[in-house]
Length: 290
Image (spheres, helix red, strand yellow):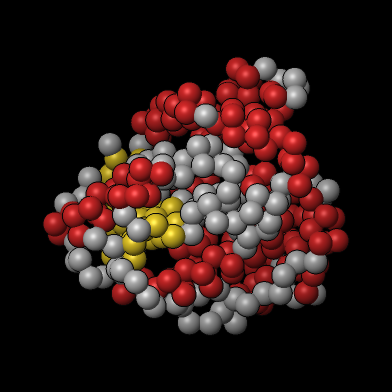
């Protein structure tokens, strides 16, 4: 782990890493020693309703240091990278030194490299995309936006769908929009970027232990509270383990099956995160784990 005394107490800190790698603990330790406000950069921890399942900081942890952008988005709302970037940018100009922490690589890229101002996707196109297979969307991207098709993580359905939606909604390839990207809100050179580099087997074991702790800590009760309004869930339905726990409550699978599926999903998500970090964050300071 990093020597916190080697960090500047003035310069913004970025902490990225895969799920279950210990990002929250590091952010809290830095805040305790040097001060600062912890700003969320995780696309699922923004939603209310899923505190335990998305490993949001506990009430006790939130009381230990200023926090922002955690659990502030309604369960049934959509929330984009653009939404996050606008909210994060507003926080950077006021308050304590930011400690920006999360596992959503696209948020960090948008913050430090800029984000194209792409119009929102109309609901009818979003519904069409939700009903399409990723392979069909990829085939269209290969024809209409080969630049993005070659760059995109072809194993990540969210990234595939986003590129397809932009193409269909605007009539322009995502690569064309990205070519017009404005200057970044916070250039990487003005930050202290830390990347938690976790060993795969070590991380897999932590993911399994953490999900069991989530179940013991109330994740099933969260799902039970949300089940009556699950049909209204928007971005929050992407919380790993959420659909599985809802299915268990509805008798569509056993709790053990839901547990196993959620752990597998978390490990696959961690693999996608690590792939993104290796490809896009080579100039961050890597912190080997354990």
